[in-house]
Structures are given as structure tokens and as C-alpha cells.
View 1 (spheres, one colour):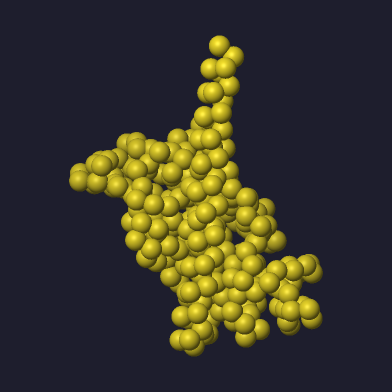
View 2 (cartoon, rainbow, N blue to C red):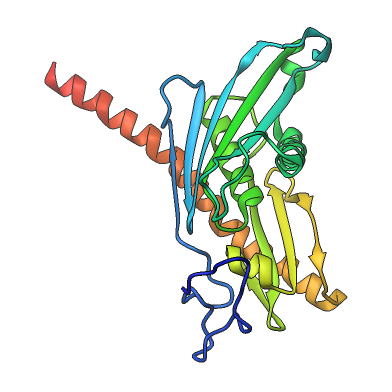
Length: 255
């Protein structure tokens, strides 16, 4: 992939062989790696590598709400804090959280709340801290995905996981899982997230130009991609408990 300097992007986002600039087919996902239980001091945690994105999520709770006036007597609350490291993007980011980080924190909260049984925890809060160490497009989708995984790792009662992916359009073609260059230089960006207990969208944002037929096709292709990512989430959770089971069996055999 060519080095991009000062927001100067290539005129074409497909190579002559029909592949995207990073060598992927139109509807091929970037490589995805997930782990859970990566932070000892958190109640639940997860790590995600998605293309060049590298993201940690840590969950704490249920615990007392501060400040107290935010507490709700009939249900718990979910608070998400999305942050990007100063070195996570090409141009150094300001350390203080900006408007975009606050907006994405709110978006992720809205995505995750429908799957949580917050009514079981009145007067308390669950806090999710997300740190983007390296960013390369689709961070709100990647962060939603890894945050859901961290909540599951914390043992928070959930109706299902939440999975997100960014669909889009470049050079007149619909594509799956936009990279950073495609996000900035493409014609359209369509982040979407799904709650699997009812298979409904909990996130749908749109920026750019598409006709209705393209929009509908994007949603169909998006569900196919979300299904694949959801399987990776489930496999990651199962792997942790399979390893625990094997350790327990090994200890019994030694005795």
C-alpha cells in the first residue's frame, strides 16, 4: 500500500488487476484477530487487531455511579469512553478527548445498551474503556465489536453479542470493510452494527452518495460480513473456556 502524506490520496482505489490497494477482493474482510482476558485488573477485557487497527477494551462493574446524580433507581447505566492514543494516527492527535471521540462514545453506548439486562443492576454502572492504539479506518465498528466481547468476558448478562462493520463505495463499486484510505477517499461510508438476539440493526450511519438499490445491496452484503465476524467473536470466547477446561483437567491428572 502506498504511503499517504498530508491527505493526498491516489486517484483510483482499485489496482489494475481489480484488487483493492491492500490486495483484497471487493467483499473480503481485513485480517481479524481477537483475544479476551488480556487485562488482569479489569473485570473483563478484550483485544482486537482488525487490519492495522489495534484496540483494547476494558470493562469495570457493576459499581457505584460517580457522580451520584447520574444513577438511576430502576436500572443500571452503561458508560463508554472511546479514546485514541496520540500516536494512533499519522498526524499526532491532541491528548484531550475531542468532539469526535465523545460522539463515538455515545454511538457505541447506544449500540450496546439494547443487549444488556441493565434492569438487574439498579443504581449501578458498567464502564467500558476503549483505547485505540493504532487506527486505520472503521474504528467505531471495530470498537463496538471489541467492547461487546469485553462485556461478555466480564460475565455481564447479555441477550447476544453486538457486531459491527463499515460498508462503503469506492470507484463506483460497493465494498466491504473500508480501510483508512477508502474511508477518506471513497464515495460513501456505511457503518452498521447488528444485535444477534433479534437480528436487528443497532447502528446505521451514512455519509456519501448511493442510490436505493446500492443501499439495499450494501445492507445484504453487510449482514454476510457481520455473520463472519460474529463467528470469530464466538470462537474467541469459546477458546478461553476451552483453555480453562483443559487446565483443570491437567491439574486433576497430576493429582
